[in-house]
Image (cartoon, rainbow, N blue to C red):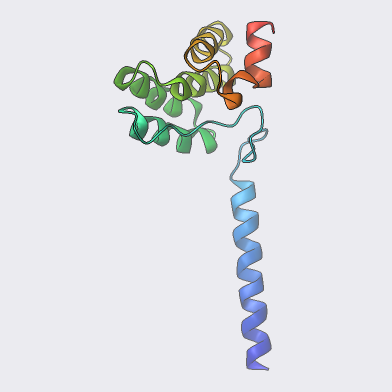
Length: 129
């Protein structure tokens, strides 16, 4: 009986963890490469730490905080396409569409061969592609 109780406790704990993870995501945020998924930066970028901190806030729906981190990442590495892209995503979420379009344009210029950026539906929508 103790063994069954322990197994049920473990199953329940796992289910609670799954529900907690899913309920913490803002609506529309995906983790499998969806249109509004923020991108991690390459390890070699001087803006990596700032960008990746911004990604964490973006995933929590803290658009304004994420925007600040992405701006820091762009300042540290102006050629970091992922930071420009992520900045654009955050600006779009906040309704700052003109600024988002400019950031999407810069991201596309910096990474024309990066499929996560160039094939992004939201980027294409902003750039009229």
